[in-house]
Image 1 (tube, helix red, strand yellow):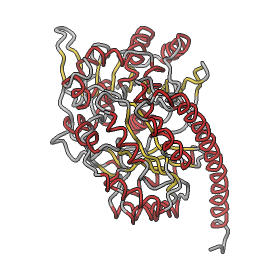
Image 2: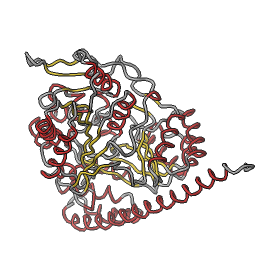
Image 3: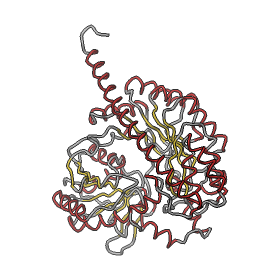
Length: 523
């Protein structure tokens, strides 16, 4: 059999769970993939690779001489980077380029305008089988999940998807550690594990989502996988804890775990076992993402006792109209507030509510309702504000075109802008900036932002006395927003230092316990 050398590339994410799962699956089959991490994620200063960075990637790829190059294209925001990288690396190596990820899964025909192959959907098993077929010199054209263009006719072939893997415990843990990795940092290409010095680690306890929010890719993915098995699947607690223990061995500074499930598992028996074992065997602070419909008092109490440090809950708008008609979300005002009361009573250290603003469907009444709703939420809490991105394949993008709010050409032009502009518009509140929209919108956005601060309520009462003429107080409000944002950034920095310091103490305690347990006669 021929020895296959894959090169796998992830964009704008040093953690990149998808890439690491693919790598570990290939390793389990006897292959030795090399990973490129092309720039880290930074929402307020995301930029394209420089010509020099592209040159470094091309030179290293040429030196490695891979049999194929796989690029994970998870977001349409950096589609142009994936296109440019495909062209540059194909020219440098002569190797075929394969795309995977959300965008090529939903748009395989478009992706094949640039890539030689596409693997749709969850790709661990499909990519391993692809390598096995190449190594054996066998025909790969019938491979499930694979898409390609016929060489002679140019006809596009889109093969059926294989059933979803139900046994997530059967997958090896994400590839973590040095030896087969390179990452862009400081205008250089560095050999080694990009997470080596990090104090946090990201993981998931599940795959899939039970909801169909109009702005999210999960609705489209659920439709693709209809009839292919349960879409929402859980790992066992044993498997999750084992991954964390392995991560601690590879990350000596580990002080915080971040669970990146779409929604953290809410099954009561799972949470009960997880909380008990996590507290006994891990003991580090952790963060999760939640949903208003899944905040149960007993679950939250158990998680807080186990070390829950932060929960992010998305309700996206304080306007029931926007949630139901635009975002396809069914939670009520009272359900959200009831969840907030549970989180406050349980003493979750940091509660963050995620809102999506700055879209063509909102009215002054919607924003007023959102502000007034935020003022009712039990404090303390923080707000995480985003502009709406009309992602390809989503219901909200189709709605924008159907309602005449945007033309397809306008939407496409927005996605072709420089990355820095796109991310600044989505994360407009970073560093105290105002949204690049009409003054009346910026006025309401700023008041909503200020609602998370106790002192902000007094400012809001003052500002609303002239809400019919928002321009008059807008300059003052933006200045105050900037001050509050600097305060928040300072607070986030001090919290991070405390977490790191706490992690050092916890690691020392664990070492002491381990050493004590190894002393003959100790209990």
